[in-house]
Length: 87
Image 1 (cartoon, rainbow, N blue to C red):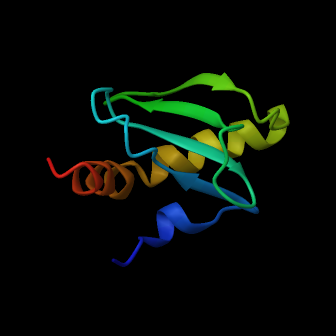
Image 2 (cartoon, rainbow, N blue to C red):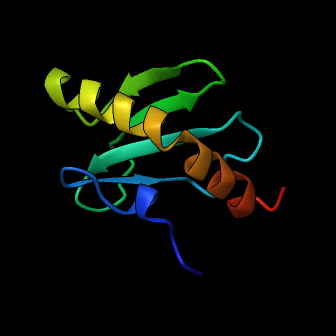
């Protein structure tokens, strides 16, 4: 299936979901290069994007841009979340 541009790449970072996390609220993992267990995790709320952790050690200046990017693409990311988990 076609992955939306919002999840493909931004500044060399990839945005992805882990398939066994459908019991959690919508969130996205972010890391450099390819999906990895060593990633940053962002909760996607109605009114804000909250970083759960930054296990990927993404620099603060990039985190700020990534949070803004998630916020600007929130609708597409949430749509893909529900599609991914069949909800």
